[in-house]
Length: 52
Image (cartoon, rainbow, N blue to C red; front, side):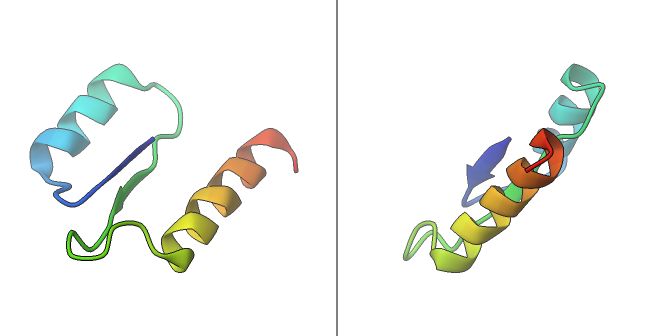
């Protein structure tokens, strides 16, 4: 999982090469950092993969 303010092609390529399973790349607004909807998205992604 990567949460950052600049998700690009290099990040996607690295994740594809190093993670045979699911990988979450979430871009956030650099001016405010992770907001509530970002945190909820990360939590939902993790919940789905752990069987909740």
